[in-house]
Amino acid sequence: MYNFLVKDTTIENADMIIVPLFEDNLNFRDEEINRKLKRLERRELFNGDFGEILNITGVKDEIQNIIFLGLGEDEKLNKERLRRVFGKVQKYIESLKGKKIFIEFVKSKNISIEDSVRAMIEGLSLSNYKFNKYKSDREKIDETDVSITIGGHNLEHKDYSDIVEESKILVETVFNARDLVNEPSNVIYPETLAEEAVKFSKRYGFEIEIINHKKIEELQMNSFLAVGKSSIHKPKVIVMRYFGDKDNLDQKLGLIGKGLTYDSGGYSLKPSNSMVDMKSDMGGAATVIGAISAIAKRKLKINVVAVVAACENVIGNEAYKPGDIISSMAGKNIEILNTDAEGRLTMIDAVTYAIREEHITEIIDVATLTGAALVALGNDVTAVVTNNDSFYKELEKAFTSTGEKMWNLPNFDDYKTLIKSDIADLKNTGGRYGGTITAGLFVGEFVENKPWLHLDIAGPAYITVPWDYCPKGGTGAGVRTLYELAKNRSEDR
Ligand code: BES
Ligand code: MG
Ligand code: ZN
Image (cartoon, rainbow, N blue to C red; front, side, top):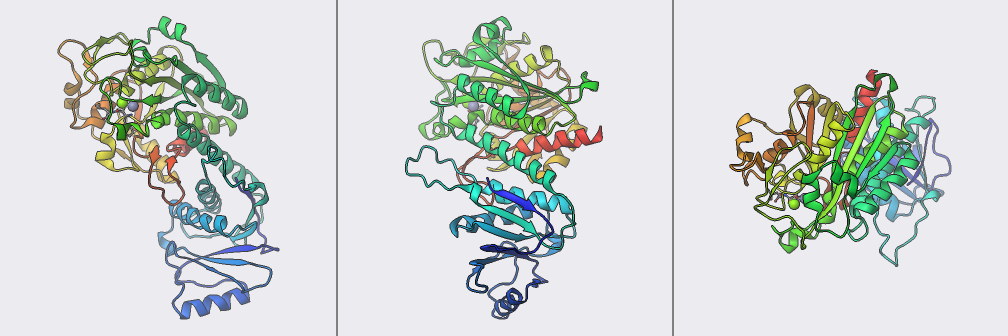
């Protein structure tokens, strides 16, 4: 991760400078650079269009590279566009091997100074992620040598170190989530996922409890147990607690993350192609672990309990089968139509556990639950199902700020008839049509009327085509938005 200094200084012995410019105002305060800029403008080599990047050398002796970065129109700029454009320019920092970098701070009409600082740091840093530990010939870049100064007179003369610190923690916890997702299933299985969570609990300051197989049986989390039964890797329930609002311990936000460390589909086996990336089926777990880490480290005034029911869905002697009828911690019986619809079976017991044993009062569940979410919304939008409009509004405020895309799906009562079974209480699939909604509502059957948001991150959790500040692989989707929601609440207290 880069070192950042944010200060109202001017350029001091930098080897690279980045000059962000609005399209209708191609001016910079340095005479030489400005003359160069005017020549480029006359020759129509640089116009300041959004996302336009031009690198020039040899303008000033000590500065090896000057990078002009187009911001487009000030009116249209927002935090997310800033993150993206700085995510893009990070690739230049990397390939041109900048070491001492000066970036002129972007003062935009619509963005506060603080938010602008945050967005610049996030874009530059989130883009700068690699999962290359298994490449034995990897290049070791010592990033502690790369220092980035965000400066210029548009900053106020004050201390920005706490904002820098907050942004760094968010980036770090997003990276932790990405790492967890990118690790293959022979490395991350329930036990090792739990071990990683224990490490994070120490580093970020939250309580943790790992519930083992025997206790899970005693709790009668039978729906969850059915899914994990045939794996040699025994299931674990990972419970993470952070109580930052001790005066209001009767209010606890539950974060439930799907923790399938591998999903082969079970006897309803997935085709080979669909199986390749299923190490990522613990993306929801990674998200809630990342979020509670950031929330705890920043000591937000909120009580959060995160629960992950971690297991592996594989084939074997003991595996559950299509046609089986299984029970659940809440006592409802479920007819299994498809063993590949396993996520919801693990989620419902995690939800029941969190309500009955941890006494959570609100629920956000996060899961790579359905391929149908990709069919409906594409690869980078989180599908939401909820029973509470004002809770959704809170989420919307948070994701509008973080730039993570989410969409609320309809939840008409009639959908519920699709998951009623003829011979048991529920069946575990409602068919192909409306698959994301019926999967969400299946989980919703277990929330005991508590305010509830269901986030299906099957698309955004893991990507094969990178975008501006998100390399391919695990993305850490949802971490920043859950943190933002918690922070908004913390500030309202
Ligand atoms: N883990 C998958 C969902 C998934 C698909 C995540 C693609 C990421 C990318 C989930 O367990 C699953 O297999 N769902 C089934 C449900 C169906 C059998 C009702 C699906 O989406 O096909
Ligand atoms: Mg599945
Ligand atoms: Zn799955």
